[in-house]
Length: 229
Length: 165
View (cartoon, chains in turn green, red):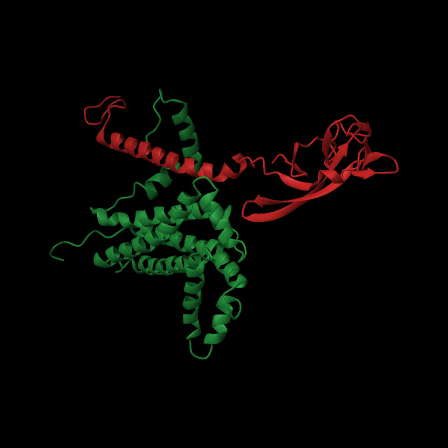
């Protein structure tokens, strides 16, 4: 990548060199992709797999917002429209639906590997902790997204799920009303879960992922422990 | 250029082959992902609304010969996930020595609704003073074409029309 262009280098190389000189493209490449890593194994791909799947969830989610309407009288109908009328709507929604489950599984496997190889130890405590926050955010995404289809399962799962908040001593009932935006799961709940699902959690998750990645690039990753260790 | 240790620019090294392979696979995957995504985004625009069903206007017997008779019609329209009721007026006219004609009340200028004015014997458009004769011809004003003639049929003495889209 960082080779100096040879005299016979084509226009593409010349353009790349021009950009590289000004934007430092090859430095970015070396820092992010060509950084030194210890000898690892296939379990180390869970992290990248999680990142790619998270990006895919973002992409399919953005596509779904093109047709989905977060309103009790139209949410279900708009999803029926996506499934039956829009080309590949079944595919996009299916990918988002199954990707959500797979994401939680992958995040968990990734965490299991990090735990197994002791990647949470000094100096990577921050990487471990931000990863823990990301696991929670993945669960919040799963929970808030579960309500959006606005079918019987979604409605009752959210009723039961939010009831848990109500179990907090003293302030429980108040918290429950705040989470639901009212006494019952309804139009306000759907709208705020939608806002949470497409704006707040993804924005926070993007920031935490950025920190997580920065730490990985800065500190590097752990080698798998030796047999004697 | 060619040194013994370093492979020359033309030679295919394992590293070069693998990064090329990654590029090809990435390209294939993005194409595979892009096709459904593009189809998903443009598909509602590619769909043509079906010609529609016959809409009942009213009894053919109630058409006064020589006078455009207004009939109100309504129909169900599917707009994505919203079902709405559309309504409008069509004029049936039976001129002497001519077949029955059903005229749309949509002005051919900019789509306002024309109204039959019995005193002046014209269809008057309220927007830009377009005037049409009883048979739909333009008398004066900006409309470029006569009023649209709607396809109709008579079933059990009822006039039924069909609207495009």
